[in-house]
Image (tube, rainbow, N blue to C red):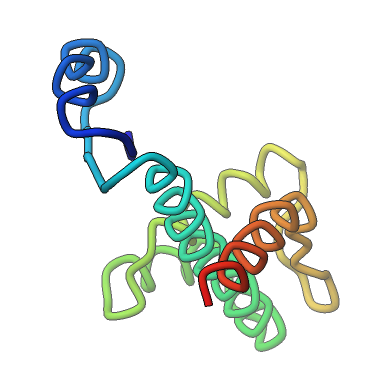
Length: 122
């Protein structure tokens, strides 16, 4: 959990936060938790989008999706996003194939919010 708020209020509520979440971070004053969530989501979605592009590259060269995921997660390209993406695609009944598009339209709301927050902060 990424919590923003007055230190004493966050301390008073910490037993509740700790009961709900394994990791609890007090990141600053009120509003900071939302800003941190936007930062985290933007990094996560960027990594996911990059993973989809990389998987498409592998598919274009005829590489097996499971093999790519196994190799990437055991080497410098290590990313939980690739593994999670494989499970997302499996649930959707499709893999990455040559010519398929890595759509992450569901993420547009987070990206737009992060961009708007960045503009307000500057």
